Length: 172
Image (cartoon, rainbow, N blue to C red; front, side, top):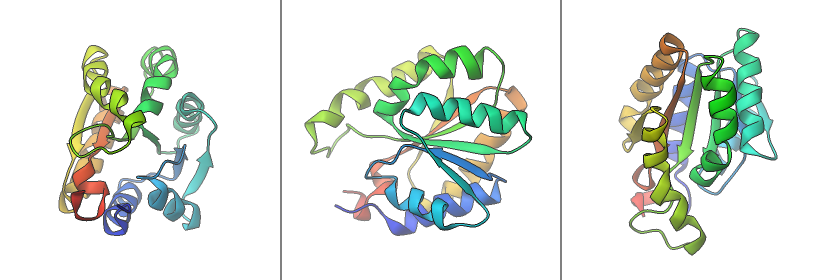
């Protein structure tokens, strides 16, 4: 099932409306259309990373330079990025907006995606990272704005989980 172009457009527009000017990403199938949109947008700077932890550092640097940013990654990438989240963003009180594709749940057909889904929410909770699920394209703009506001007010990471319902055509 292909990723939803309509939802990718909604997330892209929401990021821009929230003042995001830099997007760090490690592409994966659900967020590939969103990464392509960011790359084609002259108002956004896309930095493709080799490891998600690099994205944490890039977003931290953007914050220190006065630029709003977002980190796009898969939930397995979030698991891989924990050292940067904890020892950089949390320790130095850097607002970090993370958009995480929420793989490995009901309907998942790729066996390699299942374990990341099992541990993403418990790990976010263990780290006290505020998070929300994005399910409806009509709510995306508000959710991104609210998450960015909280990340900046709390000087902490905030995560938005890009659910199957939002990111795949017909939610499949």
